[in-house]
Image: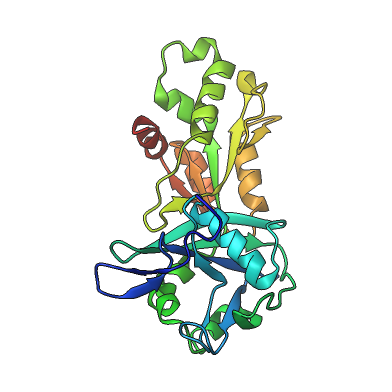
Length: 282
């Protein structure tokens, strides 16, 4: 387990050679402007490198001790002097070639960060608006996955109607200790790797609305806990209203009236079973 122990060529089951003994990863940084247009930070590879002259993501071989996120952030720092500050990782897209994988780490940035080539592997770093990307001469690996990856660029927020979920869970005696029941639920959710139909790893922002007797729930790392001062439904609607127009918001509730209210604001809804079934598979 040493730095750069991932450098080297590997062959996948499809018979192709790839750089990265333990696989590779890249950082896809996305920024949405005030109109909601996504911009992606792209790297033009130096002429001498593998697929030189093509556009793709800062990235490279993953070391044996690294996960995809750590590897992608390290590579972005080495190749574009990008730091992790100001970035929020949204998810990881896995491109599995059989025996070798490339993991695209998608991270949101609040601004178009300054970036320039930091070593000789890049000839240019540039922010490209989403419609401009396909017009470039793309790295073959990036081009093969871009059609699916570009649909994953929206930031995503999961809003939990905690009272409704706790009731659906029907934990024995929950009504006598609403704070305890809500706390246990949120602690379990905080340690859960939520399933996504496309992303191998998904890190949505999670907002939990607590109300009534459960308002004294303590802070839970990884979850934004909002104590409703009045109606829990009104607090959930308020959170949905604050979302940016391009953000995907999913409210977890079985309340029909609440579903209608947030649906009118553009949010999606799923029932508590969606979350509880994942907790049951832990």
